[in-house]
Image (cartoon, rainbow, N blue to C red; front, side, top):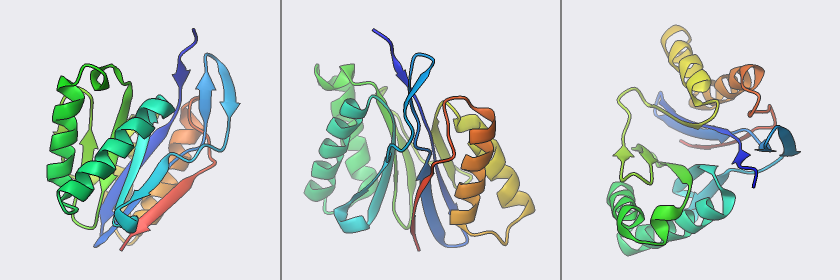
Length: 179
């Protein structure tokens, strides 16, 4: 069976704004199978934004669990992420899921992985997916050399640069922001 490869997802916190974005490409083997996938989801009435990379069904399962944790822990994102990561790591069914998540709110950016990691970046940038290093490099440079840009503009430009370099990333972008 061919593995589905896809995606670049980036979240940026800059000048009291938070934006998250993703490209829209899904690739199976060496073939683009869809060009307009929406990999960004709103949880908790839009107070938490998430992005995913990996298997779509696996990501949706994890997003449902994360939403349940957010409800259970009254919107406390970091606590919910830690509880999800613990379940993901220890539950026999969940540990087989192949996806990574980014979760953001007004105060925090988190990367959540199936290895039990919940990482809050120091630089206000978090990325996942095949083009993540390209997008992250671009965002670091833009934050440093163009501080007047908004978080949304940094996300857009970073994804555009990643799409120019990474064959698993396209320029059909979905971007959401919290300000």
